[in-house]
Length: 113
Length: 120
Image 1 (cartoon, each protein chain N blue to C red):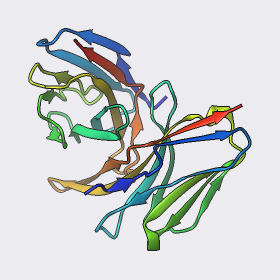
Image 2 (image 1 turned 30 degrees about the horizontal axis):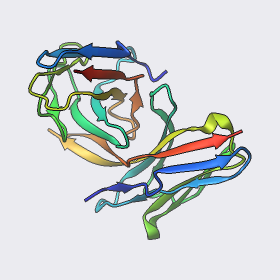
Image 3 (image 1 turned 180 degrees about the vertical axis):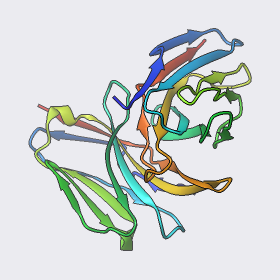
Image 4 (image 1 turned 135 degrees about the horizontal axis):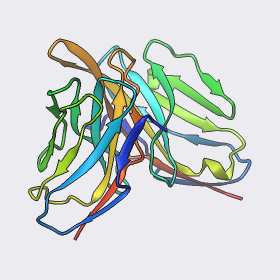
């Protein structure tokens, strides 16, 4: 695997509820990323984090929030403000000094009805 | 403007055929990296290759080969003697440096992917 654990694999929520997606890595890498994938689309960057207690918005951060309290954990919260939350969410990691390769977790498929 | 274009949305071949997946990119940087990832039905993206902008040598790894041409901004991927297990979505990606408070990390721009189906 990519050294990243995402849980659960499938998640179902009612509209109006916040939901948190888990992302854990065990390789002591600094940089972590969240992407969203919609059918027929490439991956789009939501948030990224280089170090603990620091994170930055990507291209589609509206309606999402993250935290990075521990190096190994980078959870993503999909808030009720996100208009189209149903999607496949992928977490990735990279070593800061590496040449930008990113390694991905298995993903979480979120369905909001 | 789209930075990575994968014009082929879907490709179907029969086992043992060769198949080439096209990727065209756009960047103003002189230093960048190009990637191919494979996404099988399970969903996880699997890293296949990284190529930096200063190395235009083609690369071969088993049945896989990559052709990088800066003159045409293309980074095409060929699978020789395709197998059913090659069926997946393949993504081409471009990395540009993202300088954040003095540190550099790379962000990836992905194409929309090409769904490859290999029939037995």
